Structure formats: structure tokens, C-alpha cells
Length: 112
Image 1 (spheres, rainbow, N blue to C red):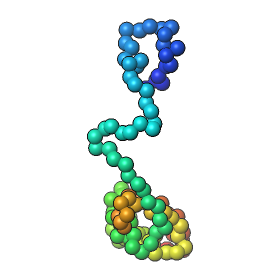
Image 2 (image 1 turned 90 degrees about the vertical axis):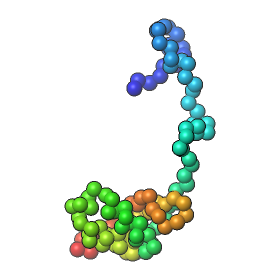
Image 3 (image 1 turned 60 degrees about the horizontal axis):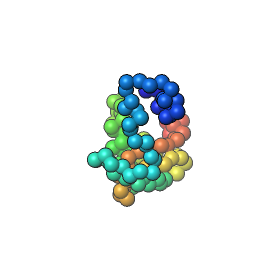
Image 4 (image 1 turned 120 degrees about the horizontal axis):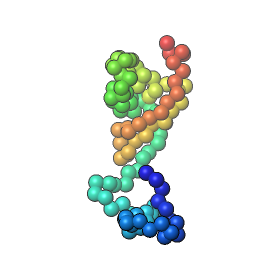
């Protein structure tokens, strides 16, 4: 989609379609008016043992799970949740232990 032209640029070239000029300007500080949208607060935390079931669920829904297998996905979830040497962050919403995502760096050679 081409960028909108400012009012000064569009005055020189009059066209039969002036719908772009009729649209209200988008304001980033304006409240959301679309139905079904709501504000969500995300919480970031270090992986902990209590996150293992949610990590397992996220890994089982990932497309690579079919290549890894359920046992490997479970082992990776336990490793991320319980290994103090791994580095990562889990992302949750709603204050519980349910996660919406995670990122982790694990030395797989050390655990082969």
C-alpha cells in the first residue's frame, strides 16, 4: 500500500477519489474502538520448575515437535525449566503459571 500523501501534495493533483482525505488521522494515543480488542499486560520471568507444564504445552504445539517427538519435547521443557545454567525468559499473562511464549538458550552439547 503506498503511503498517504499529505494535504499539500494532494491539492496539486485532484482526482475523482478523495476518500484518503476524508479518513480521520490515526492517533496512537486514541483508545481502541474495535470490538474484541482488550489491553493485555505481559509478565516476564526467569524459567522455574513451576513453568514446566506450560513449556511442555508450548513445545508440543510447535511444528518441530513432530520431528523431535513428545519425549524430546518433554525433556527440553524440563531442561529449560530446571537447569540453572540455561538462560531464558518466559512470558505470561494473567498472573498464573500459564505461558504465552518463551525464549531460551541451552547448551545442548552439555546435555547430549
